[in-house]
Length: 181
Image 1 (tube, rainbow, N blue to C red):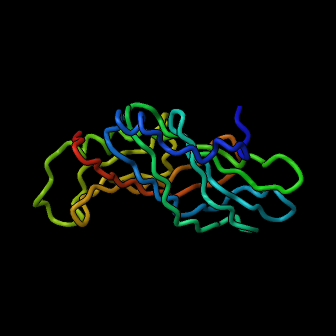
Image 2 (image 1 turned 60 degrees about the horizontal axis):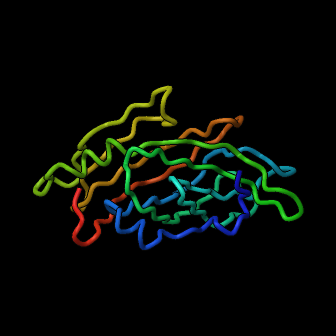
Image 3 (image 1 turned 90 degrees about the horizontal axis):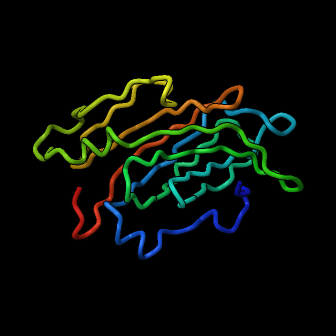
């Protein structure tokens, strides 16, 4: 297993992966809510997002179990059926970083909405809803919305393999020139 500190952590999409790409998925990692304590009274959390061989991470927020990252991570999507894994770690200076839970989500409902011709819809129109199930990590219903001429999806993900914690994210699509879904 890759260590959270491995140099390949911020591997950018290669030219060949971009050629096979359908487009780019911008994941805005908004904030963590009630994350687990891994140091004495708090944690120094950061998020790692992985899809296939791509792995990106947010900055570390010091001493905060309710961190606000508001950071954009961008993945190249060649196969929308590959699930995306999000893992939260506690940064430690003198030992291995502690895992603070993980979540997995798919982008199928989001991709299906992108394939629809939605120009002309009123701003804020809900295109589809994704309900929390045992097979996904949603802590509440997630809506795919037409907003400002774009499809967006807000998600609140309940972390697994940990006593508590959620991470709020937002998905947005970036079209590549000459590529269409």
